[in-house]
Every structure is written in structure tokens, then in C-alpha cells.
Amino acid sequence: MTEQSNEVQANLQREFAALQKRTLLCYQCSKCSSVCPAFRIGEYNPRSFILLAVNNGIEKASMDKTIWLCKNCHACTICPMAIDIPGMVLLARIGALKNNNPPPASKTGHRRIFNLAQKIQAASPVPPVANKWPLNHQKFTEKGPVALYTGLMPVWDNLMYNYDLNFITGLRAILEALNLIGVEPAIPAGFKDSGHDTYYGGDEDTFIALARYNRDLVEKIGIQTLIVVNPEDYHAIKNLYPKYLGEFPAQVIFWTDFLVEKGFVERLRLQSYLDVELQVAYHDPCKLGRVSGIYDSPRKILESIPGVKIVKFRSEKEMAPCCGVTAFIGCDDGSLYLRHERLKEARDLGVDVLVTTCPSCVSHYTCALASMQAPAGKQPKELKVSDLATFLGTRLFHLDKK
Ligand code: SF4
Ligand code: SF4
Image (cartoon, rainbow, N blue to C red; front, side, top):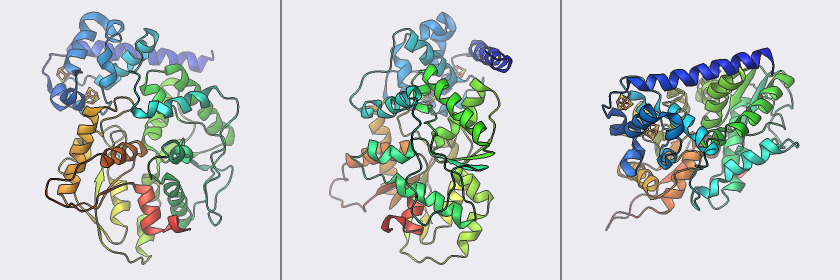
């Protein structure tokens, strides 16, 4: 182990110890439970979980089956004592795998296929080829200081083949937008998945293997700015990698922030695309909103698309509800109820398209939409769910027709 990794390891241990120590401040006020979506629909109660961890220690808490019901949505950051409940849940999950308390086996959650894909990628000596999707006219390079990180997005449509998600059009739209503002990013072939889902599934070893691989590749290629297309990957690379591996060698930026900072919205105003008006509501994903604090740039991009009228959800930004599933764990009737609630709200508001920026949210809401009943006696307007990048690609650039 190098001197730096020894130091990082010591910092991590200190952080985990401080995290546990802070739980001693819990005075059982139940504020966390009052906002917790998992408590609303199931047996998990964050207040009780913290009490268990305080009284019996994290080892004992890691044996509790209900830890797999937490959504890691961070709504409980309202805790008046600033106790990091999702952080404690993650610690418990890491311990749970070692204590033979794995995530519940479930046919729903697509048998956690992304987790499996990440495990395969972590173990494989053959790097994935992730840059075969750009269209002929689109410009990119293999190496360069500004790179696009796509994680599993190029294969997502295939993994979720039973839904028409069209994330490939979204990737192409991001590249089209970058080219429009004069950026020809590097799209290196060899990146592996960020490991977000394996980490939230408690598999720390697979996560570290993926993190180390991706970090080393960034260093080897000399990337200075890494543009990330998925909020969960963004959170993993920006916030979790440095915890385990020390300072990340490049600036990590979410694609909407990059485009807005580089003047994409102003550039768009020079274009004239006419289309019918659509009522669109933006849903803040937990990992991009509450966890990463990115609320404005996706809205700015959405607002700048001609023919789009933004309709506001009653609860948005910090108060936005979770889609009910994390790392493809906890996809059950309760989480379906949460998604139906959000979709009903969109329908009641007369929304045509619920747009969000997280492929997981898009997948889970699309799945829930298919099972939603129309209100009795009414023929509601058709509601669709779309990723912002895919929406940009179809509505603005018409890439789905190329
Ligand atoms: S909100 Fe904080 S202090 Fe209150 S019960 Fe939950 S963890 Fe304890
Ligand atoms: S992260 Fe979300 S689901 Fe988990 S305890 Fe906090 S509020 Fe509940």
C-alpha cells in the first residue's frame, strides 16, 4: 500500500468513526421518519435504525433486514443533529454483505442486472468498448483534455430492452450539443461503470476495483475535465471516489452544468426551431438534487427548448420525492405506489412529458407508467417519461430520425 493510500485509508476510518459517534446525538425526535419515503411504505424506520446502531453498534445494525429498504434519497438530511443517516445505512450495508445479510433476492428490480454488469466489468481484464454510438457527422476524439464519461449508458437500452427508453439518442444529443458549442470531447473506449449500484448494494470491494480502474484511466489519458452524463455516476466519481482513493485527477462536472457554463443556452437562442407546445414538468433526481445540489442547469436547458412550457411540481428541488428505488434494490409494491403518486400529480397538472436527468428514474417511472390505471370515467391526456438528454435529442435535434 502506498503512503497516499495509507493516508486516505486512515481518513476514511476516521470519517466512518465520526459518522458513528455523531449518532450519539440522536434524541429520537422522529423528524427523519416523518419525511422518509421508506417509512411511509414499509417496515424500515430511520429513527429505529439509528437507535439500534447507538444501542447495539453498527455490526448488529448491519444484521437488520430492513436496512435494504432505505432509498438513500437523503430526504432525512433535515435531521436537526446533522446525523448522516444514509451514510450510516451504507456502513451497515457494507457490513451486511460480510454478515450474510445480502439485499433481498427479487424478480423485480430486473434481478439487479446493472449490479451484475458492474461486477462483470470489475472482474474483466478486457475493457468495454463504449464509443460506438456517435453518428457519422458527430465529432469526438479518443484522447483529449475534455472527456465524456458515459458509464453503462451505451448498453442501457439493451439491458432494459422491454422499454422504449432511447438513451442512445440522449447520448447523441449531449455530443451534438457539445459539438454545437465547439467542443469535440474525448470518448475513451475503455471506461468501466462507476460502481454506484454495487456501492449502494454494500459491495465495497467491487466498487473500489471499478473506482481505481477509472481513476487510473483518467490519469493515464491526461483528462482534465470529465463530463458525466448520469447523476449516479456523477455522485460516485465526484463524491465517493476521493473518499476511497484521494483527490481525483480531473474536474468532474455534470453535463447540464458544463453546457450551461459554456453558453449552450445562449447559443440555442440563436437557433429557430418551431414545434407544437408541450407542457413539461422536471423531476429532480435524489443524487443530482439533494445530494449534489444541481437544480438550475437542467431547468435552464429545458426552458431553452422552443415549444416547451414548464409546469412546476408541488414538491420540487430539495423537497422532490424519491422515485422509490435505489441501485435497483427495493422495487416493490410500496415503491410502485410512490412512483404512481408522482405520475398522478403530473397527470393532474396536465403534463405531457415528465422529464428528468437520471436514467434510473426514467426506467423506474416508465415501468410504473405502464401499470398506472386511468382515473374512472376519464380519458386523461397521454403522459410520457423522458430523460432530458433524450428529450433534447428528439425535440430539438431530431436525432431519432437520423
Ligand atoms: S431526525 Fe435525527 S435526531 Fe431526530 S430521530 Fe432522526 S436521526 Fe434522531
Ligand atoms: S435516505 Fe431516504 S429512505 Fe433512507 S432513511 Fe433517509 S429519508 Fe429514509
